[in-house]
Image (tube, rainbow, N blue to C red; front, top):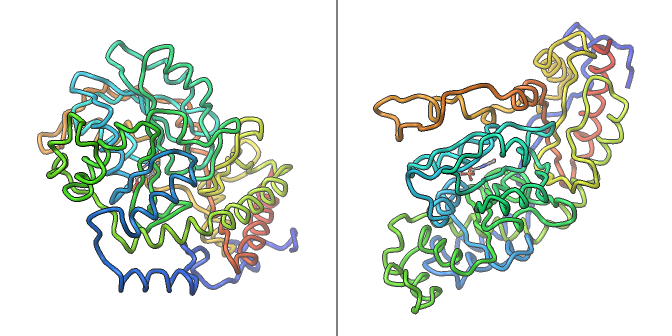
Length: 413
Ligand SMILES: *Cc1c(COP(=O)(O)O)cnc(C)c1O
């Protein structure tokens, strides 16, 4: 790599000339292809967990290290189930991150729960202090998102919830491989959800609710499944057993093909983790002295990264260009996957949570937007790129590092 060559955007030679797509997930290997084909011939819809659905859920529970896992059609559906199972009622409130994907909070708001949005720290995460700022006597629960793979400071958040008698829910959609001070995320609270959309473990579309509480597991079955499975898996002595035939009226089953993809993903999770951790370590080391961009990765003492994407913080005071110009310069070098997130931002000011139009699904009770300095500071400087983690990724891993180094050197001041 020649640090002195002009930037591609200014007529120089591109660092990277690799054919798109530069990132594909999941990596469709011959054995994944075979696993999906085999399932195609076995069944396209399962009414109970005797087949691939049960296999996927057991593997997922083992992966997280939790007693129970219940699958859903999406992470959003699983979070909606979590909202209902938590037993929150209109008039109750929940504390949620302002900086997250909308589905962390929207299912609660749909059910008439007031969502009180909390500010973010240096990693885009809520903390006990940012949650405490929004606490009122109506608050019954907290939901956290481990943003972009970085675990929230769970010890202090668990303590905060305990001190105020609040349920603790985790949105682990970005953090499949994360730990917080040695303990796997998804095991700190009462329930947790992992989306398995295009995340570190994927089923295409899908989501999983995990819990160690048997009552919550049975209720989760009622909120996503019905009839055969519920009749078979719910204790006939349970007060809610009469609902087993219909469930709670919301059918949100994962597809068998998705579950087959998930089983394959979990079979290869150790390899995915090893490869992604190595790439993360390589980028973290290579960018350690870079004044323009710094990896957004919590210190080792705080926990292990969840390996969804590699997040970077741009330092505007050390650069002659803006964050968006920096990203455009990287893309011009051929690093097309260097990116500013599109669908994850400060959701508290989105029309869905802020406006009061008659056709909107609910009338927000949230106080109008007051500004979130932590969220703004994070969102305005954040940049992400893939962590790859499959056979054949080496040219991308090396090429993107070269592109980041070249552009950083050119714009540093
Ligand atoms: C993807 C995602 C969801 C929603 O999951 P879907 O499976 O897309 O419905 C929720 N929260 C976060 C943080 C996500 O990234």
